[in-house]
Image 1 (tube, chains in turn yellow, blue):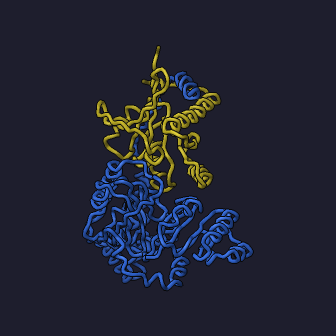
Image 2 (spheres, one colour):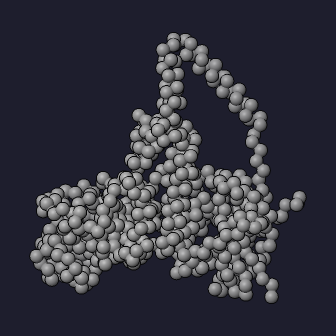
Length: 168
Length: 370
């Protein structure tokens, strides 16, 4: 049986953000080949989802980010406060990577306001996904990944698969 | 000590109320609903019952129940969007005072001041198991010392008008409240205070657990919070140097809260003064200040004085020289712009190389099935 791994990166500069969303999350750490923090979601038949945590401003994360992010299907970023540092983070990411970035929003009373503000910022970003809290960490991760994969497949259906660059 | 029973369906409403009330010799206890309260009625000699609800009909029912059982104790009521007729009805049912939600600090203060006996309460120190000043004790170490023993009770933090509390059950931190911050951030902020008073009172009636982390994880968070603050502080000039707002800054470009902070620095403030002025999560404020410092909205004392001196010297020169200088400056700026246009910063953008989209479909079906 062929097993596969789905790798995703979460761009964050605040580990607390992750703990806020998933208080009981089991954060793992590896130091080789890169020093990376990650979470693992085990699916059936030993298939797995790996979620890496990267900090844009952490010099130690620069190398793993450059080596990994181009080969990932997409990255995630949680939206807390729409302030200047957030705008800086997004422009920083979009100027460095072409890998699609999905903004994950919490379902709260400010949601509409946040969406319209981000729409005005005019970044060429893919759509937003809304974080639906489920009973367990595992279910929340699965639901989130499912929501994004839905969007990815819609995107492919509409525009076709992005062509790999010629010079490799 | 005056004992007040607060009956509120949501614990957060209770937290919001008690963290707003100025430090008084009053002990508040939370009950989820009337039946829980009646079961534990013997716990204290209650002087006041405070009912909080988000719906008028529920509040009315609770008020009737309380007044039937214990008509002699005065009852306070709080509910959002009160109409005049509803207010009258509550008074007819026996409510002592009715506040619309949200209750402000001023309202609470006036109400409690109208009860002179609240202020004539006996020496409060005797009522606590521990009382100390944060000026001499490290907040985290203090909290740690309460957690190692098999303690159950409430650690109260008071610093002027600021009030917060950390609840401990059998040595485990279970809940904390400070302003409207989330419980974990409340612990981080409260333990980082350098002034104020801490008191501990043993209490068996502790609220539900809202902080799911273990004590070790919480202390690790505290450590991380402290390290983050130290890291942020490195970006600022030494502690004794005052920070000023830039003399050319246009205050109207900012929102009301940012403007008020910038205005506070108009006459210069050291970073320690700012720390004591800011009531919320100071690391958050430090990030903002760091950004302002980078953008030169705020500048260190020396730079400020040199800019001021330059400006004053300029004002004292004749109008004609000022005009010439202005023209020369604008020419220079244009030149600079042209040169910068010629050499745009080259930043290599990494391409998107992911190709196995079939795999994504497989994963999608796997996640769906589960």
